Picture 1 (cartoon, rainbow, N blue to C red):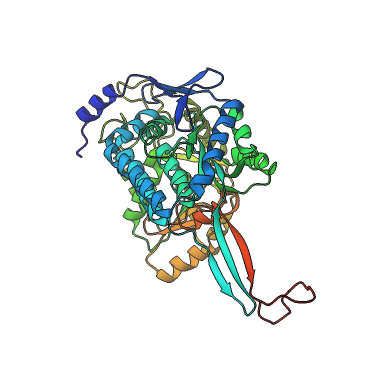
Picture 2: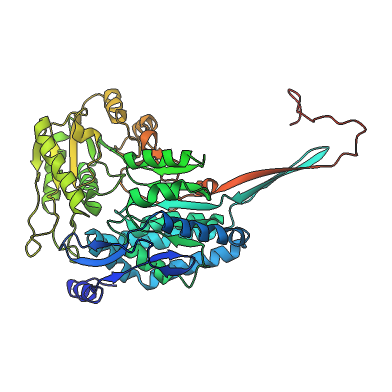
Length: 512
């Protein structure tokens, strides 16, 4: 499909009538217990797009009970059945590709091109990947002289899934596809800031998924988060979001001693060596600055540039960044849209002021942007800070906006020390034409994902997750299925009955 501004504006008018979504429980849409709603807003225009329920603990309980009731049958479903359902979901997304991209752009403020070419394509691909993976969770056997041991791998049960507002539909796909492939049932809590695409998606697949297999509860985190995570019938929690929220969720989950997967923030280092392709490295820095408005946990927000390449890099970075078109997210030519919410706009604006107080130099941007005909929109200029020290707050804290800090380096060992000197460890980039150096730096970085000579080079089945306080567990890969399953060992005795009973414990250095 060729996107045009006329096409997107026409579709925006079609989607413009505010719609109210209920809670999705047991295959049915029901009104929230409290009867209150939350408005979903277009951050570029501040126009109301729709309403979701402001849920509470009673809503959570209904959803978990529905998921628990559906679990036994779904857990025993054939892999082929789960595969067919996941494929059907992917096809449903494909059929409404443009509409979902529009909903993402309208509710989140991201450029329509980002949503169309990345978010929705990624959501489709994720369901397709895990459709094939539905056959993967399997056990093993081990034969002994006196016994056969079977190890079954079984779905863990009802899973609580909490997703963020920056890539709503893609995050829903990440969580739901892997859980369903493993045989788990789901209670999904989307972000109240931006979830219009997710709610429409759930409505569109209601006829595909058996009742109770997927349930959705909307509302503020403080009202539904603790009730969901600490519910006695929830067997696992998976969360993508901020570290402070994760700390609360981990505490809630501890009540019932259940496992968690946490995919949290980042302050990733994008390392430019003196022998790098400087134009390409600068382009990567531009992309990580503007893609999804910088509202990406794996963004390379700390660019470490070798002192011999700094001047050339900064010239290329600024030149390319100044060529970026910022404006109406519905315009296919737009490359930088609006911050997803007033709260996020204010947060980023606060860091722009803080950077100046800390002594960083504004090399480019550094303030709110004014967009013609969208004067009330929540836009921030793409910003470059130089003369940044790694101990500054702007170099240590996740800003989640189109803001990049450039840090000069000379010695590789010292640079690696600084790159690792952060509480986060999610992603990283390396730019060099020296293969040995690339491997050496990659091994030295304390981070879960590293790209060499192309940032954001995501591939199907790539483990997504971090080190340190960027979380634990992995998303998007076959390993994810192990997080949604448990092993059960069954040992079948083959010996004749003995006159006396003795526990068979393995002796040292013997068969075990």
